[in-house]
Image (cartoon, rainbow, N blue to C red):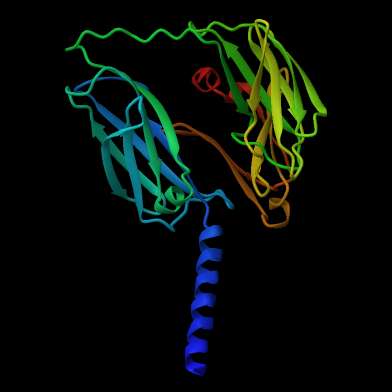
Length: 294
């Protein structure tokens, strides 16, 4: 009887440790493609980077990266898996002439990310010249949300840009406000040609919503949940320079040095190591026209 109890206790302990381990495994994927518009018969060339959500460094935890091409109904029409080498992969995908023209999503994830249904998603368009294609007509106005560092970080000031556009991607001016789940206003939002910018500090346990009008109808946009243990980068533009600064609510006590890098798929343009609290300033003359204009 005692051995049976010991077996139950060990089984419960193993289950708790397994659950704790999975909950603390957090990876992120960045998938970069050679372009976003393709013809059937071409190849999609891509490069994948798997990093730790906590450290931002390349992760050696996962050995495989799963790649899928999804149609407009989110059904997979292509699936493969590639072997990661210290968090990096390079691959390509041939676009069959049997694929219909339309909008698709190229997604990438590791096994740990799939458990959380957390995917890296790259929208692409495919045109099949061998079929008669009528592009879809989009009549609704669209509101898009962009956090300056890619995600909202809890407990620090976050700069946010929103864009309101019509079906022809023309900016539409609007007014609105940001409120929390208690109904308290956090910011007024006034756009110029559909583009607006505001800053606010997300608090733990609070959710946030943007309220704006579309004609005579009130619309609501839920902001994504802020990350409690994440870092972000802010940029301040001066007349002759740019200043970049790491802002977070946990890394200052964990990191002795940070590496700031500006690169594209082929080249590293700027690389500098400095203290986490120290901002990095660069003259505008250091940036090529290609970097500034994207």
